[in-house]
Length: 495
Ligand SMILES: NC(=O)C1=CN([C@@H]2O[C@H](COP(=O)(O)OP(=O)(O)OC[C@H]3O[C@@H](n4cnc5c(N)ncnc54)[C@H](O)[C@@H]3O)[C@@H](O)[C@H]2O)[C@@H](O)CC1
Ligand SMILES: Nc1ncnc2c1ncn2[C@@H]1O[C@H](COP(=O)(O)OP(=O)(O)O)[C@@H](O)[C@H]1O
Ligand SMILES: [K+]
Image 1 (cartoon, helix red, strand yellow):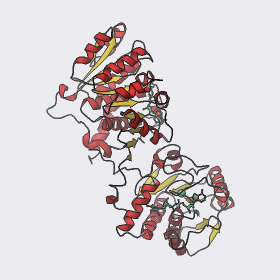
Image 2: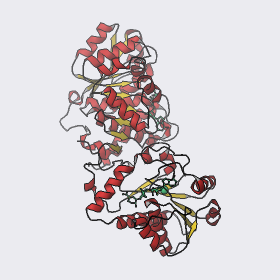
Image 3: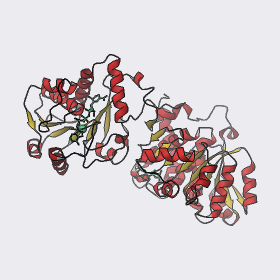
């Protein structure tokens, strides 16, 4: 019940397969390229008034799209100069060569000096896209450097040259674009940093590749969106009651009491019917006086803690926020995991397994969601690669759902699926925002949403809540904005 297709992220290789499948189904490659280049020209005309345009064309299909865009813009009366890398016209009998042939005007050699002709204009970057194979060098590198040093706007075709479509990494040097137009579906490089920042806003144009090519080649990776999980979102039922909306238990710490309070409030706001905060006896008065709709139960040792967990109606646990890194935290986490119910492990519940990750991995399951930031992640996972690869590998290794936080949060399932979140504003980089997220995930899981879906949905709502507030956000504000984010979600048609 999760839709991985509508916002699927395709690797350059998968995009190539989509292209081939479309051609095999009867859409000529030259037509796809014509549609792609025309889409670029259209998006430019939509955003900029008529002005001089320099189209920098590479030797592959990315360049092919550039020749098409140049032709349409020139037909519509725009002053267009086309430049290519010296001696690198498209190979004969390719779609790119066909479209280069339809450009009847001169093609000049690409150089940084050409930028003087478009100081008041625009550059279309059609040098390299999905086929980037090595760091740009020579004329291409000099052009990228000079263009980045200027304030001439850049519209990138597919990807800014130098950005790796697979993971958003920069190969050598990359252009900073103001707009990127890609085709059919985005690639991971459009949503992972630093690629995402280099793209500017990314527009996805449809060029005649049918969605029917997707099953079989996509389905592993997608951009987070209500389209992915809205069909499983647990809206309150007309005849529901508080017990049918689940009961979340949040473990509180002795000293940093704010973290667990934020998580508990967020769980309630996200819709858990009941929320209990389990408080160590010495801190019980602090929690009890601060919380009204949330129940506060005290415990004094591992036995009374165990008895708090016994009620099976408590169907999801949150452990970690504000607990401190200690053996006690590790033991509480293991006690919770032994119950084999849904749980969210955040912050110190993760860090307390530093140096002993196998103990954690042996206890977690697909019902557990781990929500580390990069620092916590590095304490238990020894994996390398892009953020997407690392989150995926961590989920596979641990057997839990892993939500690796940051500006481009990745949520990975042990079965290999991964979602990249893109709606979080940087205002979220504030203490306690992660505690709120942990509580929101638990609030959705309490209502029966599967852990992976709940993690994706909570992450999107968290970003939307922050967006509603804007600058000046503190974590406490998020709690009050969860209802506004839910209202926005209500208006999104269920896919
Ligand atoms: N479904 C698709 O696959 C579609 C692809 N299209 C376009 O096709 C592009 C992919 O085409 P290609 O696979 O031909 O790849 P590119 O055109 O992105 O790049 C490959 C070419 O650039 C050269 N090259 C790569 N890195 C270089 C470097 N650092 N310095 C110098 N030369 C370098 C390669 O030798 C090759 O000639 C996409 O980015 C997109 O713009 C569109 O036409 C629409 C459909
Ligand atoms: N630059 C950023 N842009 C968007 N979201 C961010 C950014 N930095 C942090 N976040 C988000 O803010 C939250 C911070 O969580 P975390 O690091 O656990 O903080 P805390 O432990 O103080 O709650 C996470 O959801 C994270 O993804
Ligand atoms: K490009």
